[in-house]
Amino acid sequence: MKNLSIYSHKPVVHFFSVQIILMLFIFSAVRASVGRPEPNKNPDVIGRWDLTIDQGGKSQPSWLEVQKSGTHTLIGRFVHSGGSARPISEVKVNDGKYSFSIPPQWDAGTRNLDFQFEVSGDHIKGTMVYTDGVTYNWTGVRAPKLVRDKAPVWGAPIRLFNGKSIKGWHVDADNQWTVQNGILVSPKKGANLISDKTFTDFKIHVEFRYPKGSNSGVYLRGRYEVQIIDAKNGDPEPINNQFSSVYGFLPPNKLMAKNPGEWQSYDITLTGRLVTIVANGKTVICNAEIPGITGGALDSREGEPGPIKLQGDEGPIDYRNIVITPVK
Image 1 (tube, rainbow, N blue to C red):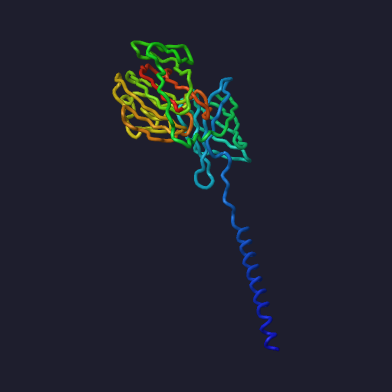
Image 2 (cartoon, rainbow, N blue to C red):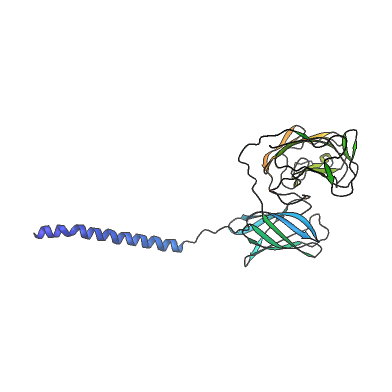
């Protein structure tokens, strides 16, 4: 009986030993997890923002992008109503509020532009001290991603320019545009020409001709400028403010510009944020993402349809054969 009693207690001792070991393991794991730092959550400010600045009673479309550099530094890019995307070396944070400072670009004056702002979910608001020293208020919303789930189904082509008049278009200043022998002519620096119709996704064919040293652009949805410029009279490298670039953002892979005085063409496809540009028969940008609005945009409401804008406020330019094929 004694031997039986000894063997009957062995399973009980083994059971409690396993329990103690398991509890020690769990306690050690809990201590280790408490001591380990949690991964840093990205602040809500990170992302792209469509801004509107109330500058002297006039709404100025602008754009801001904030990114994380390394483990804790915030950097970014800013687009004002004119000029190209400007780099932000550091976006500083203090007590939940953000700030940055950038030098002037095409702005009048020499002082920096100073920004302070705060973020609440998908909304952003703040102030800008401009190069004139005046403080302006601004607000913004998180920019839409504009992702398309399906391939586009194209509708019927539309001739935006009838070859006879500027019917179907309007201007934003005193009109200098005329029609001569089926050609849309802007003989001097003046107003921009804006289509009455608005579009979401589309393909557009446009032919143009400029004199030496001139400059124009085709604005997609009135927000994204495809640059037209005399590349033979400027920087020969395919950078992001040159011929066939998306101004300030996307450079072409090759410069396909012809000589001043020659007719040239763009064939552009825009679906969501993705753009393909064929310059004089050569694909120079292929299905690339446009991050945000470019300088000279009509507004910053990227989620809405927009018109075609032909830039006429930089120099003489001729256009013809403007045909757009919208998505159904």
